[in-house]
Length: 224
Ligand SMILES: Nc1ncnc2c1ncn2[C@@H]1O[C@H](COP(=O)(O)OP(=O)(O)O)[C@@H](O)[C@H]1O
Ligand SMILES: Cc1cn([C@H]2C[C@H](O)[C@@H](COP(=O)(O)O)O2)c(=O)[nH]c1=O
Image (cartoon, rainbow, N blue to C red; front, side):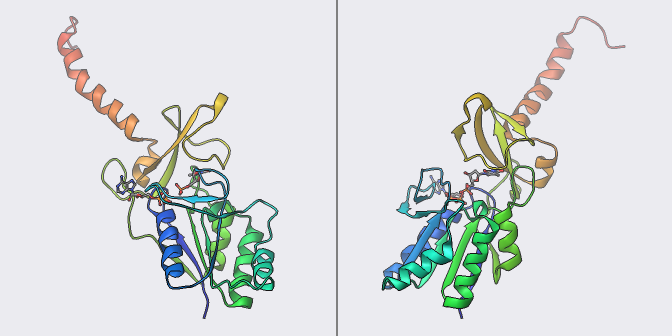
């Protein structure tokens, strides 16, 4: 029986790599798939991983009807044995419903990949719908790590080196936001996310703690 599976995890935990591996493994066994993505950092209509692998994909524009794409392929005589959807957090809730329909009415497996929450810890609308509808939510085995060594559970947004908790929900990673600065992301454990302490802030805090006693030693005013 076909399934809708949501493979989720923080940024940088290997979701796109797993999507590419699953696509490769199925195709290597003669199965035919459709690959979708939205707003991949490598550009439009491409599914890429940080390991350097990439494959062409159908770009999921906000108005795209995913059910219709699959049905059109089938009506055109093409086989569709599975569907891969990367960056699924960016899909509209209705598009997630299209995917559930593909599973239930066409008996085609759908494997969706994405992060659950944004830089404010709020669920993306697409991820929320996936959690509501998926047969299974599978957390990725490779865990991303916070700078402190704990398991990373949260995605922090860093603008010009400083962690922020306000702004647009969607800003593609590692891009120059122009007037709004260089936008990067860093995964953190909850403790350091709550304290707004990314690696750079922790380093600065450690440095000032090192420097403080020296400054006190050098201070000409005796302690009171
Ligand atoms: N130079 C490297 N050597 C080995 N593994 C790497 C290297 N660079 C990145 N990775 C792996 O790639 C993962 C990120 O892959 P990617 O599929 O792009 O993640 P995601 O889609 O979850 O953001 C990292 O967690 C790490 O395991
Ligand atoms: C937390 C967060 C992330 N994004 C963007 C940044 C990246 O382009 C993708 C995640 O991709 P990955 O393959 O999982 O690294 O999402 C965003 O737009 N808003 C956010 O809050």
